[in-house]
Image 1 (spheres, rainbow, N blue to C red):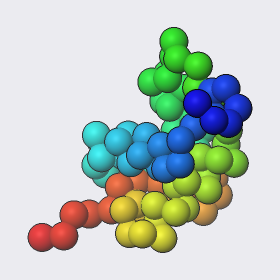
Image 2: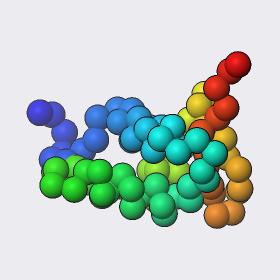
Image 3: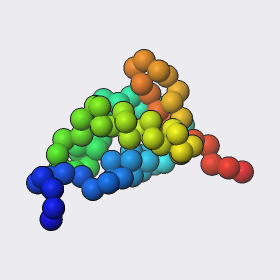
Image 4: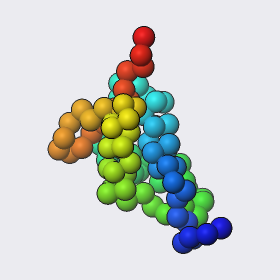
Length: 85
């Protein structure tokens, strides 16, 4: 494929974060926890380790689209947005 070995495809990090948040609604996750869970899910693949900066940026994009909520600013902590009734 094109690009550096192990590079994530566009949107895959957001998808991984959303999967984690949706699996545990109401559970807040700090960036470090999200990184650890993403890395554990990618164990055995050639995917690069999830960097805190990349995870933060992807999570903030989920907040902008309404899919996630920033519940604490420092340390940045996120949860899944309530589904519309």
